[in-house]
Length: 321
Image (cartoon, rainbow, N blue to C red):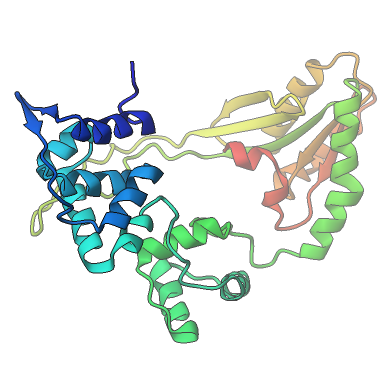
């Protein structure tokens, strides 16, 4: 069986016209070819020898086939056949040779694309339309936002939100803490199960409805019922590294006593551990006198490691919450 999309099938379709006809719909198309009507003799001969798909359609048109029957024989749209007829009429053989899936010539040169990349690395553009304006002003080339989005994708850019960081964060201090303290602890925990590592923090999820966008008729208002008032939900949790297991406790409020209870849970999970390293922030309950007293106990194996100020981005459990 011949694949209908193969060049062999298309050549059979063209060759069938030379043998007197081919089925189209419920009947047969007979072919009488007193002379070329569309192609010149040289173009017709060259098209048949190459077997290129647009050329074949033009050959069949030249043989007198209706566009609809060519479309049925080659499993394409009739308008595609008519478009190839128009291209040959206006541009000659070159017009249909250009359709051999060669792609279009880029509107920007490689050097200009490099300058676009440099601009986007130096400045944040919020939309493809803004980049279109930059390209039009700098290079005199007009792009639609849709085409620009495709170009930016080819250049390795994606559309996403920037990452928020605290305004008072000390980037140098955070980098030093990461390299000198946090990274060694993570490597140690991965290599030695007797020195586990946990990232600890609390969360306060809101139990309420949050409206989102949807398609609503202009001038109309849709309503979304909110939930009735209820007590806050507070979860105190720890995320282990590298296993990424979660230990959590429900609490009415995060206090020094609640933190001690969580630390006791973590220590109980590792009865043979040399030390249980726990990453915490600088909240007052983590530095409370009761917590310091408990940590100083003879049987306490929990060791707190305090994050740099304004560094929630270094606490892995923040990704979970």
